[in-house]
Length: 303
Image (cartoon, rainbow, N blue to C red; front, top):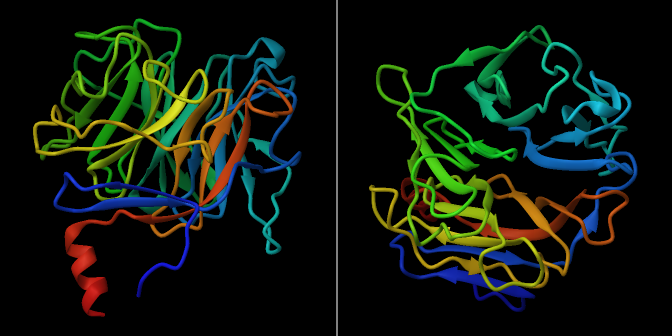
């Protein structure tokens, strides 16, 4: 069936998988139950799509109070489509330093985190998160005060925005792969097509493990940081399609970071400083993604 009308369509035809995402609305805030006068950042959606996890900086209810650089908080979607008051996940996952959630593993039973101590994971036991256990990643080193990242939906790839070995500028995008023995490879720079002499941050890998969204201030756009989309063209993780700006429905004169969504989701979530209650707020835009693995596309076609 032909689509009758859409606001914005971005299509990458250089890949045999034909990735597309359609943007149907401008940004809308998740509201005061989620956002605050403090900086909300680093959004992650739960596997069931019913909760948003994020980092809140310098909030008086953080473990370290107003001097705390970031704790992980969570808000849950209500039956009416609203959001509950965000709550701090507490001392089991947070400490007095900058804490960030990278994503989920084992169908949501394990959470991947980053703190100045490194990368760690925590399991949920009887509804409670246990103390995180550190993960060893060879030659993992961030030289910047900023770091962001995500884990692929199948748990095989870790992507980071950080300043590390072989950087083209400041923060670049890197990838680590989970090996058959359960160990991670050392970070690999994703190359000059996606990285610039400026900052590339908050990578997000879609369900096909090929389509990536990220924020950059090193390309022409609407504001300081804009969200871009690119697609991996081979297995080297060095060859990418030219990054495409997601346009003025997503990007503004402010700063946009952390664009994430679930497969077949109705909304994508992001952080924006435009018209925010604080320095950065959680927003969402209505979307229709068409980014799925080739084998899953075949199943849907014949079903």
